[in-house]
Image 1 (tube, rainbow, N blue to C red):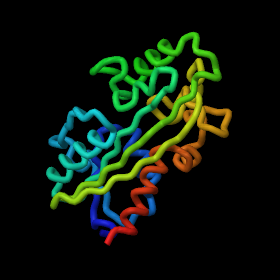
Image 2 (cartoon, helix red, strand yellow):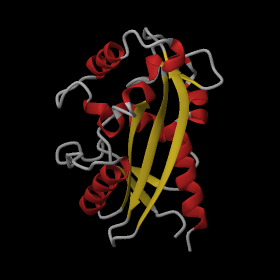
Image 3 (cartoon, one colour):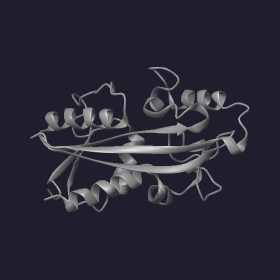
Image 4 (cartoon, helix red, strand yellow):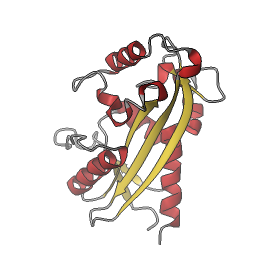
Length: 201
């Protein structure tokens, strides 16, 4: 398949847009974002039961809207002490009108009393690429880690202030952006997608 001439990023999340632009800075494509058509960019409900379904829903909708290739990711945090929750519902963990602050507070509350050794978790990201003609590709990335009891750091977004990646003693929110992108679930997923595009016939 190789790289399409242009790819639309199917996201309204400024944090994601910023990270994807950094991670994919070497992709030989023209990027299209909500900033190009802010008035009528589609709002896609994440009604799927998995990361794959949600990512594909967003990519297909924006591919149809822009008549170009579109890429989307769905990601979440999976906490072992909570049976893998919140998972695909990470962005709506504290309710449908959730904010990042409320989600973070809700997760810390749910883990109250869980000892350090039991606070294992992972970030998971699935990337879907859709073409207007219906062809699709997908890729996945995972980052293992532990959760703190209090937020630390001002960088990143989402659950980054309480997620300490394996092998580090700082949270994702305390890492420089380029280091976070190198080890993050999103960075790994988009680099895997890049390899799929290069390998596709």
